Image (cartoon, rainbow, N blue to C red; front, side, top):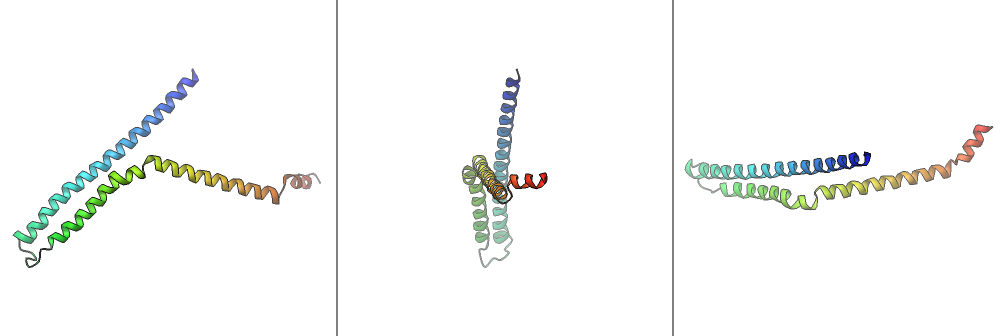
Length: 129
């Protein structure tokens, strides 16, 4: 009876984590799509300013603006689709476990140092006297 409820809680936690991860991914992809739409509108706007309004007409400066912006967009897409696979939830969990293990090892080393420098038998003898 109690075991079943504990299993249900762990399933609920796992489902909650999956749901949070899915929501985070949806938000990332939505931001990327918004970035793409703004990039397209902004690129058209830069071309219109340079060619139609004849601002800086002697030089096609809009090309550099669009190239820079496209580089930033590609970097954003790389972060969403590629980096997420390498540094996703599993990577974070592995890093967290690694750091916790290092901390536990360091704590055990400090405890050993304390026990060797201040053994309990000496402390108990001093209390008895």
